[in-house]
Length: 178
Image 1 (cartoon, rainbow, N blue to C red):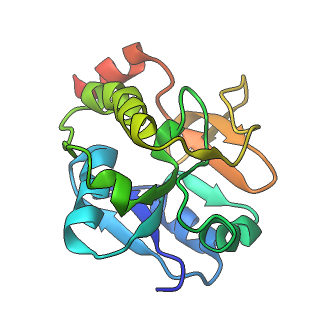
Image 2: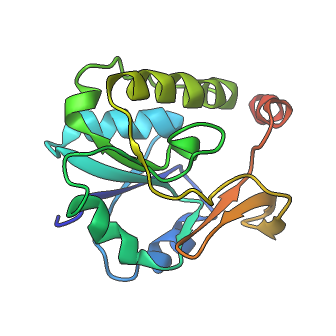
């Protein structure tokens, strides 16, 4: 695979086909399991030998993929955060490096609350080993909402990416688990 792109999904996802359609011809690996985002990242770490890979949730739509080759060519050997909200690697979006992941404990999460809490703690641990390039400065939470995939979403959007965010506060995460 020229540009290792991983799409994290779950059984019965209403978003996956939209995400795949938006990739426009780039090869990708879809990982479907119950471990939320960390389960997918851990699976890629355990089952591939890739030195670098980009992770997208299936609720991402690629509007313009011209940035993807840059992540692997001009930024080869560097970690890249694609979303800085609420922290680097927000929504787990970014390019991860095996050399950094080798130094971390990769823990699967089993609940949405754990996944939301892990988003920040994983980012903090990763960034303590290597500070990533923050690629998009404009992909942030905003009062922009859209119904898509059978749910109300906060939409984070720029020229390149549209992210449908179904959980934007802890109360919502707690409701998912109940």
